[in-house]
Length: 151
Image 1 (cartoon, helix red, strand yellow):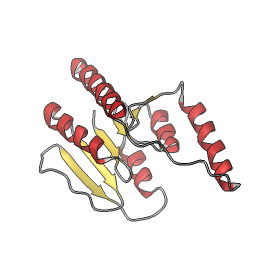
Image 2 (cartoon, one colour):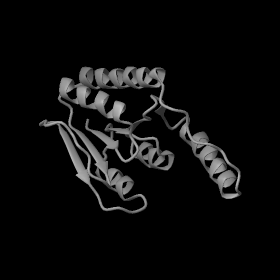
Image 3 (tube, helix red, strand yellow):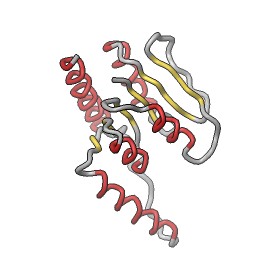
Image 4 (cartoon, one colour):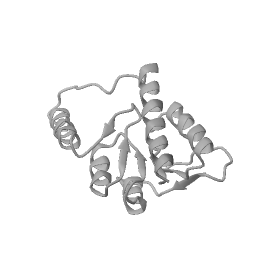
């Protein structure tokens, strides 16, 4: 298992949780973004900077991910592609995205895009709460423990 992070919009607090988990478990973790990111010095934490452009970072993640890898992303279309490759997707808010729930999430996303395109103000996501952070950390720990037991 490797962890891949869609890092362009990943909150700093989530990256910090991931850095600690990567060091603790020694699982290779790679952040991919189209702008420079600072990462701690580590043998298991890596950064790949891609060129700017629509979905360039997403395409790089899809190209590199394999079955049973873990991808951290809030991007629903990217999550759908990752799930189709039999990898695990966890949102920065701690929602585990699966074959069972991804299609409904895609439908909601497409509906909201249509609303915004027609001029309706839909607002953005709520601010990241302490509960979101805890949910993310708990799901991450469960996924990593399950992986380590299976080794």
